[in-house]
Amino acid sequence: QVQLQESGPGLVKPSQTLSLTCTVSGGSISSGDYYWSWIRQPPGKGLEWIGYIYYSGSTYYNPSLKSRVTISVDTSKNQFSLKLSSVTAADTAVYYCARDMNGLDYWGQGTLVTVSS
Amino acid sequence: QSVLTQPPSASGTPGQRVTISCSGSSSNIGSNTVNWYQQLPGTAPKLLIYSNNQRPSGVPDRFSGSKSGTSASLAISGLQSEDEADYYCAAWDDSLNVRFGGGTKLTVL
Image (cartoon, rainbow over all chains, first blue to last red; front, side):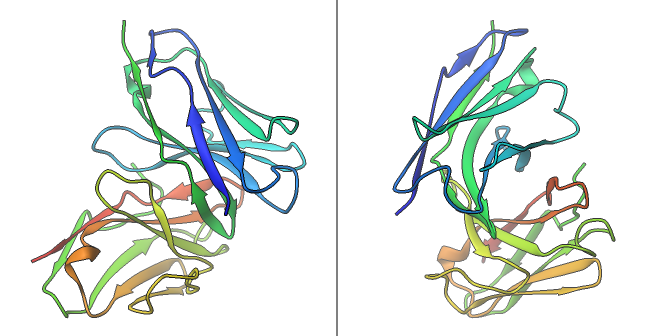
């Protein structure tokens, strides 16, 4: 059974860089035709796709966040990561990592990141 | 404002059939498949329907999906109290971005 777990600071100061890691267990991140994704959900609001990294290393980002987002993968640790730069209060959200094959079929539990000084 | 349009709310009584719509365009729903997610309060979303009308293992057959042109629908028959949740449609667009609908809050009266 594939499991995903987000980790990283729960509080980030404005203008700084948000960094999160997703650890995948129960399967290799480099096997299969998967897109490893980040999605966020501001408090009380809907889901927003941030981007994904394909198992080959190709990345695709939400055009509205593209200038601030970097997603990378560390196959040796079976992890993929998210960096979001120049954060503001509008970036406060629950951040989820997920696997996408035919739909986002496995999700992490989510981690709340608050942007505040 | 979401690229895919859903009604913000829907409701029904136990046993009833409820449908939730999702409207897009030729560059997303019109040329790609639609997935549906259920999000129970305080939990991560769960894949409910993929590839327009396929149910993952474990999803009851009370849930069904359909697509026609640039719109899609999720139907829930035999509504149960545990179906009270937020429902999201999603589709890729032609630029390989994932687009979510704004979500529909389903209330079981």
